[in-house]
Image (cartoon, rainbow, N blue to C red; front, top):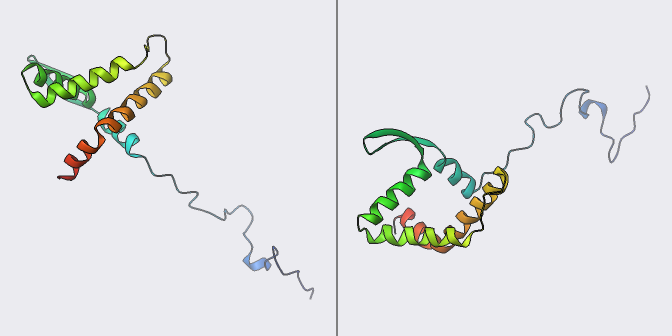
Length: 130
């Protein structure tokens, strides 16, 4: 009987991985999604909305903006302030007419981050029920 080598980096044969079998069968765990990526998934979902007697499919983002604009026009002070802030943020952003879709997505992400930074504490308090 020959004695097999043992020591650091040389485990006994019966404890070594078998050929063709992964040492990590479940693989690397997927990373957690961020708050912004979760928010984008939610606001980009389509819903049915009744606008001027017509049933339309809009994203939640579009429906939100439609509602804010309508409420602001009807005299809602909070909606008016929110609409003003959104328009101010939009005016600060460069023109995206010649940009590709990925560049516009990056631009939209920057707008969203800026908006959340600006109004974040107020929105967070409302979400937490304070």
